[in-house]
Length: 189
Image 1 (tube, rainbow, N blue to C red):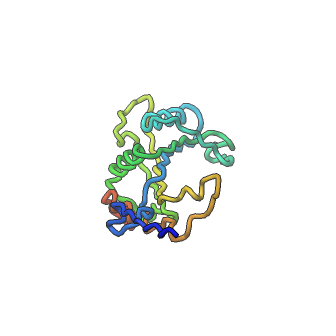
Image 2 (tube, rainbow, N blue to C red):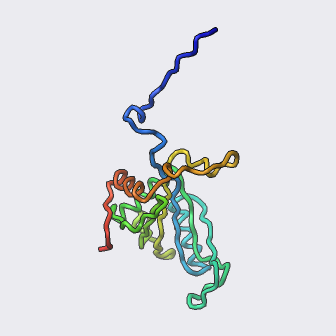
Image 3 (cartoon, rainbow, N blue to C red):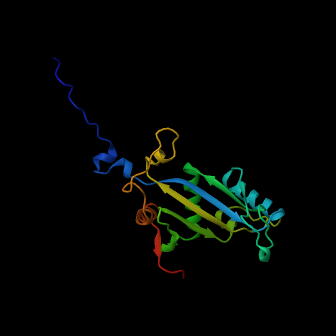
Protein backbone atom coordinates (compact mmCIF):
# COMPACT_ATOMS: atom_id res chain seq x y z
CA UNK A 1 0.00 0.00 0.00
CA UNK A 2 1.00 3.53 -0.71
CA UNK A 3 1.26 5.99 2.14
CA UNK A 4 -1.37 8.78 1.96
CA UNK A 5 -0.27 12.02 0.34
CA UNK A 6 0.57 14.77 2.81
CA UNK A 7 -1.93 17.67 2.85
CA UNK A 8 -0.45 20.99 1.84
CA UNK A 9 -2.26 24.20 2.83
CA UNK A 10 -1.42 27.32 0.87
CA UNK A 11 -2.21 30.53 2.70
CA UNK A 12 -3.06 33.63 0.74
CA UNK A 13 -2.23 37.15 1.88
CA UNK A 14 -5.82 37.67 3.08
CA UNK A 15 -5.76 34.44 5.08
CA UNK A 16 -2.43 35.43 6.64
CA UNK A 17 -4.24 38.38 8.22
CA UNK A 18 -6.73 35.92 9.67
CA UNK A 19 -9.42 37.16 7.29
CA UNK A 20 -11.43 34.97 4.92
CA UNK A 21 -11.14 36.31 1.34
CA UNK A 22 -14.74 35.25 0.64
CA UNK A 23 -16.01 37.62 3.36
CA UNK A 24 -14.75 40.72 1.53
CA UNK A 25 -17.24 43.29 0.21
CA UNK A 26 -17.11 44.63 -3.34
CA UNK A 27 -19.23 46.75 -5.67
CA UNK A 28 -21.37 44.54 -7.90
CA UNK A 29 -22.78 47.43 -9.92
CA UNK A 30 -23.73 51.09 -9.93
CA UNK A 31 -27.03 52.19 -11.46
CA UNK A 32 -27.31 55.84 -12.56
CA UNK A 33 -30.85 57.08 -13.13
CA UNK A 34 -32.23 60.35 -14.45
CA UNK A 35 -35.99 60.56 -14.10
CA UNK A 36 -37.39 63.32 -16.30
CA UNK A 37 -41.11 62.62 -15.94
CA UNK A 38 -41.88 63.12 -19.62
CA UNK A 39 -40.85 61.73 -22.97
CA UNK A 40 -39.43 63.80 -25.78
CA UNK A 41 -36.56 66.24 -26.06
CA UNK A 42 -35.68 66.49 -22.34
CA UNK A 43 -35.46 62.71 -22.02
CA UNK A 44 -33.14 62.53 -25.05
CA UNK A 45 -30.90 65.19 -23.49
CA UNK A 46 -30.85 63.29 -20.19
CA UNK A 47 -29.79 60.13 -22.05
CA UNK A 48 -27.02 62.12 -23.73
CA UNK A 49 -25.77 63.28 -20.31
CA UNK A 50 -25.62 59.66 -19.07
CA UNK A 51 -23.79 58.61 -22.22
CA UNK A 52 -21.23 61.41 -21.76
CA UNK A 53 -20.70 60.39 -18.16
CA UNK A 54 -20.37 56.62 -18.61
CA UNK A 55 -19.57 56.01 -22.26
CA UNK A 56 -22.45 53.48 -22.38
CA UNK A 57 -25.81 53.53 -24.13
CA UNK A 58 -28.59 54.26 -21.60
CA UNK A 59 -31.86 52.32 -21.34
CA UNK A 60 -35.23 54.08 -21.19
CA UNK A 61 -37.70 53.28 -18.39
CA UNK A 62 -41.44 53.38 -18.97
CA UNK A 63 -44.23 54.57 -16.70
CA UNK A 64 -46.04 51.71 -14.96
CA UNK A 65 -49.43 53.42 -14.92
CA UNK A 66 -51.16 56.63 -15.99
CA UNK A 67 -51.01 59.61 -13.63
CA UNK A 68 -53.23 62.38 -14.96
CA UNK A 69 -52.01 65.05 -12.52
CA UNK A 70 -48.44 64.57 -13.83
CA UNK A 71 -49.73 64.08 -17.40
CA UNK A 72 -47.97 60.72 -17.68
CA UNK A 73 -49.46 57.89 -19.74
CA UNK A 74 -48.86 54.18 -19.14
CA UNK A 75 -45.84 52.77 -21.06
CA UNK A 76 -44.60 56.28 -21.88
CA UNK A 77 -40.82 56.64 -21.60
CA UNK A 78 -40.11 58.88 -18.60
CA UNK A 79 -36.56 58.07 -17.40
CA UNK A 80 -33.14 56.89 -18.54
CA UNK A 81 -30.76 54.67 -16.61
CA UNK A 82 -27.43 52.95 -17.12
CA UNK A 83 -25.65 50.14 -15.23
CA UNK A 84 -21.90 50.49 -14.70
CA UNK A 85 -19.56 47.82 -13.32
CA UNK A 86 -15.90 47.47 -12.43
CA UNK A 87 -13.35 50.26 -12.12
CA UNK A 88 -15.55 52.81 -13.92
CA UNK A 89 -18.27 52.27 -11.28
CA UNK A 90 -15.81 52.98 -8.46
CA UNK A 91 -14.68 56.21 -10.17
CA UNK A 92 -18.27 57.41 -10.57
CA UNK A 93 -19.16 56.53 -6.96
CA UNK A 94 -16.08 58.46 -5.81
CA UNK A 95 -17.03 61.54 -7.86
CA UNK A 96 -20.67 61.35 -6.72
CA UNK A 97 -19.67 61.09 -3.06
CA UNK A 98 -17.27 64.00 -3.50
CA UNK A 99 -20.28 66.14 -4.50
CA UNK A 100 -22.07 64.94 -1.33
CA UNK A 101 -18.87 65.66 0.68
CA UNK A 102 -18.70 61.97 1.69
CA UNK A 103 -21.76 62.41 3.92
CA UNK A 104 -24.74 60.05 3.69
CA UNK A 105 -27.80 59.56 5.84
CA UNK A 106 -28.27 56.32 7.74
CA UNK A 107 -31.59 55.99 5.93
CA UNK A 108 -29.79 55.80 2.57
CA UNK A 109 -28.80 52.19 3.33
CA UNK A 110 -31.18 49.28 2.69
CA UNK A 111 -31.48 45.98 4.58
CA UNK A 112 -29.89 44.05 1.69
CA UNK A 113 -26.59 45.93 1.87
CA UNK A 114 -27.21 48.43 -0.93
CA UNK A 115 -27.30 52.20 -0.72
CA UNK A 116 -28.32 55.13 -2.82
CA UNK A 117 -28.06 58.90 -2.96
CA UNK A 118 -28.89 61.71 -5.32
CA UNK A 119 -27.22 64.81 -6.66
CA UNK A 120 -29.11 67.85 -7.87
CA UNK A 121 -26.81 68.99 -10.71
CA UNK A 122 -24.86 66.72 -13.06
CA UNK A 123 -22.32 69.46 -13.83
CA UNK A 124 -20.88 68.95 -10.31
CA UNK A 125 -19.43 65.65 -11.60
CA UNK A 126 -17.06 67.50 -13.93
CA UNK A 127 -19.15 67.61 -17.11
CA UNK A 128 -18.97 71.01 -18.81
CA UNK A 129 -22.25 72.97 -18.74
CA UNK A 130 -24.01 73.12 -22.08
CA UNK A 131 -26.91 75.61 -22.29
CA UNK A 132 -28.67 73.53 -24.96
CA UNK A 133 -28.68 70.45 -22.68
CA UNK A 134 -29.58 72.11 -19.38
CA UNK A 135 -29.02 70.72 -15.89
CA UNK A 136 -30.23 67.33 -14.66
CA UNK A 137 -30.22 65.75 -11.24
CA UNK A 138 -29.49 62.05 -10.95
CA UNK A 139 -29.76 59.10 -8.59
CA UNK A 140 -26.83 56.84 -7.73
CA UNK A 141 -27.70 53.33 -6.57
CA UNK A 142 -24.83 51.11 -5.42
CA UNK A 143 -25.24 47.33 -5.12
CA UNK A 144 -22.67 45.62 -2.89
CA UNK A 145 -21.93 41.91 -2.75
CA UNK A 146 -19.50 39.31 -1.46
CA UNK A 147 -17.55 36.83 -3.60
CA UNK A 148 -19.72 33.76 -4.15
CA UNK A 149 -23.00 35.58 -4.87
CA UNK A 150 -22.85 34.06 -8.35
CA UNK A 151 -24.36 30.81 -7.00
CA UNK A 152 -27.77 32.53 -6.82
CA UNK A 153 -27.58 33.76 -10.45
CA UNK A 154 -25.84 31.00 -12.41
CA UNK A 155 -27.83 28.72 -14.70
CA UNK A 156 -26.60 25.32 -13.55
CA UNK A 157 -26.71 24.22 -9.90
CA UNK A 158 -28.36 27.45 -8.81
CA UNK A 159 -28.77 27.73 -5.05
CA UNK A 160 -29.36 30.26 -2.29
CA UNK A 161 -26.77 32.44 -0.64
CA UNK A 162 -26.60 31.52 3.03
CA UNK A 163 -27.96 33.92 5.64
CA UNK A 164 -24.54 34.43 7.24
CA UNK A 165 -22.98 35.28 3.87
CA UNK A 166 -25.60 37.87 2.88
CA UNK A 167 -24.76 41.53 3.34
CA UNK A 168 -26.57 43.52 5.99
CA UNK A 169 -27.18 47.22 6.49
CA UNK A 170 -24.36 47.39 9.04
CA UNK A 171 -21.90 45.70 6.63
CA UNK A 172 -22.68 48.30 3.94
CA UNK A 173 -22.27 51.19 6.40
CA UNK A 174 -18.96 49.80 7.62
CA UNK A 175 -17.73 49.36 4.02
CA UNK A 176 -18.71 52.96 3.18
CA UNK A 177 -16.90 54.32 6.24
CA UNK A 178 -13.73 52.28 5.63
CA UNK A 179 -13.50 52.67 1.85
CA UNK A 180 -14.34 56.37 1.51
CA UNK A 181 -13.80 57.52 5.11
CA UNK A 182 -17.43 58.59 4.91
CA UNK A 183 -19.60 60.20 7.55
CA UNK A 184 -23.04 58.84 8.48
CA UNK A 185 -25.63 61.41 9.55
CA UNK A 186 -28.86 60.82 11.47
CA UNK A 187 -30.78 63.73 9.90
CA UNK A 188 -30.23 65.97 6.89
CA UNK A 189 -28.73 69.32 7.79
